[in-house]
Length: 40
Length: 222
Image 1 (cartoon, rainbow over the protein chains, first blue to last red):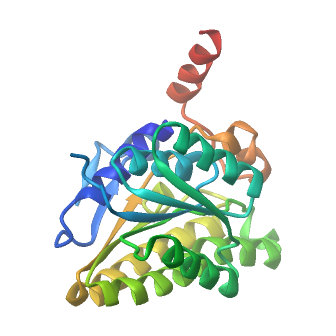
Image 2: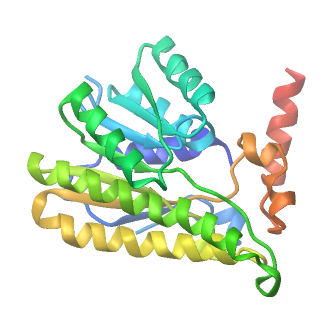
C-alpha cells in the first residue's frame, strides 16, 4: 500500500461535511484478507 | 476553489511517511498545515517540500507524549493561524514481541505514543473547536484493530484503543459540530518499513505488501 492511497482517503475524510460523524474507513482489505474495501 | 481553503490542520507525525503524505494532500486542497513530530530535521524538510508545492506549512517540533509540548503546539498554532479546523492524530510507534517476553518499557512506549499522544492532542483540539463551533478529528487506526497479529500486543491494543477514542470523540463532539473519523490502513510503504522496522519489532507481516515492493522496485529502475 502506498502513502498516496492513504492520503487520498484522509483528505476525503477531512473534506466531508461536519455532520458526517464516526466514519471508519478500512483501506487495507488486501492485507487483512478481508473480502473488499469497507467504509462504514 | 479548493475544498480546504482557509482551513488550518495539525498533522502529528507529519515529518515522514503517512503523516507527510496526508499533510501534502491537505495542503494541496488549500489547508494551512502545521506539522508536528520529534525529528526536527525531517519535519523542517517536509514543511519546506509542501511550501515548494505552493502550500502553506510550518513545522513545530513536538513529542506528542509530553503534555507541556502538546500544549505549546496548540498555543503556537493559534498564535500563527488564529484557528484550528482539522487535527490528524497520525504519530505512531510500532514495537512488540511475544507477550510473555515483552518488556514493560516496550508496552509503555507504544501505548504512550499511540494512545496518550492522541488523547492529549484531542483534548487540546476539542477545547479550541468547541469555542469555534466545529472541527474534524481524524485518527489513524490500523488493520491491526481488525485483524491482530502475533507479537503485536501493544500495537494492536493501542489501535483498538484508538477506535474507542474516536467513538467517544464523536459522541462528545456531536453537539459542538466536532466530528471524528478513523482511518484503518494496512502495511504502508514508508521510510520506517523500508528500513526494516517490521523485522526489528518481530511483528509478522509488518512489511509492505508484495505489490508495494514490486512498485518500489519499479520506481528504483525508472
